[in-house]
Image (cartoon, rainbow, N blue to C red; front, top):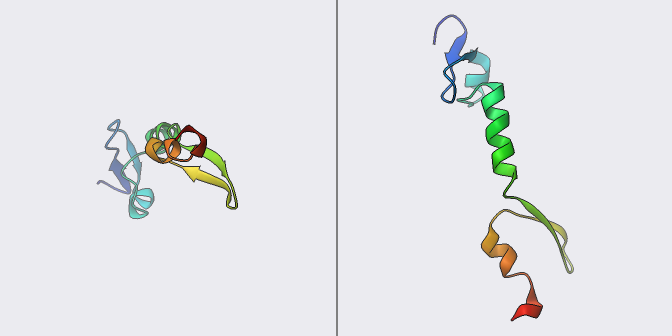
Length: 69
């Protein structure tokens, strides 16, 4: 950390120390890339009596279809 900047864990570029104070270890570009990768595994599924629900684990999604049992 030197003079208001920190080094990004992902690419090694400098980013604002204020972002580090918020708890981020990545610059905006690397953070956006990581968030996009994480969202690829998400799915929104309509469930009876609950409405639309965010599913983030494939195992949960596989157990939702009651007609395949």
